Length: 368
Image (tube, rainbow, N blue to C red; front, side):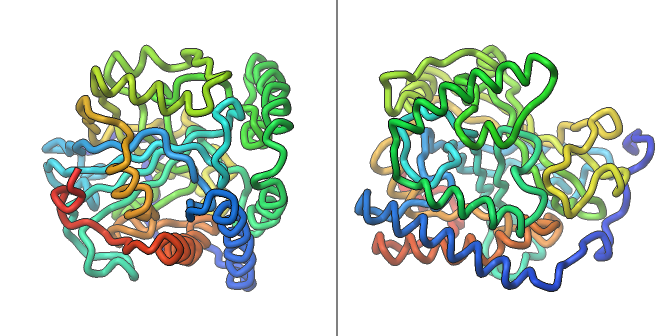
C-alpha cells in the first residue's frame, strides 16, 4: 500500500548536495579544535573522553523492531524487511567536558544497530552496524560545517574552565529560554550555552537534525517516547541541583525498575526549497511533511550505567552516522564534516585510553 503524502517525497539525487570548495580546510579546522578540547579534558580527567557528548548518563541495550509490510516508501535500507535487531543506546549531554548536571545543556542519543546486512558506506565496508546520532532538538546549532567550526572555537576556549560561572549562567539562560518558549519560540544558541530546561531526558524526543539518504528518498530521523512510562516524563521537571550526576541517577533508577519503548520515525523531504539539504539549522515544516513511524525501539529493565558498560560502550565504541548502509548515507555539509572528524577523534580516545575501538558483530561481544 503506497504512502499518502502531498506533495510526494522527492527522489534522492546526487545533485541535492552542494559541496563547497573549501570543505577540506573546514574539516581540518574542526579536527584541530576538537583535538584541543580532547587534550584539555585529557589533562584534567587523566582519561580521553569524546570532544562532544563526553558525559554519558545511560548505556543501554535493547532491540530495534522493524514491522512487516511497511509501505514501499518506508521499506528502505535497514527497514526494507521485517526484522529484530539488537542495539546499543547511549544517552549523553552535548559538551566535551564533564560538567555538573546543574549546567543544563542539550541531550544526545546515539544508537548502534547490530547485524545489519547490505551495501556499506565507504569506511565501514566489513561491518554490520548502523548508527544514528541524535540530539533533543529538531535543528543543528549552525547551518553548515564552516559556521559550526567557528562556533566550536568559542566552546573550546571555555572547556574545563569556571564551572561555577557556568552553573550561574545556566540558571539565567534557563529562565530566558522559558520566556522564549512561552511565546512559541526556541533558541538553539541559549540551549547550547546552558539554557536547556531541567526536564527528564527520557521524556525528550531526539532528532538527527541533519538529513540522510533513505534508500530512494531523503529524510530526517527522530526517536520519540512511545510507552506510557516515558511519555509521562515529557516536560517533567527533574531537579538536579546539588546532584552532579543527577541525570544519570534518574536514569539508573528508572531502568532498575522498568524499561521503555520509543518510536523511530522519518520525515521525508518533499520540497528542497523549504527543506534544505545543506542548511541544518532550518526545521523542515511538519505541516508539509509529518514524522512517520517506521520502527520501534524496546529497552528492558537493566543496569543503566556501571563500570563494565562504561568500558564496553563509552571507551570501546564510537558512534558515527558514517557507520552504516549506503542506503542511509549522511547528507549535507554538517554530516560530511563528521565523516573524517569522528574517525580522528575515535583514534585519539583509543590511543590515550589504550583500548581498541571496534564495531561489534553481535551483542555477545560486549560481555555485559
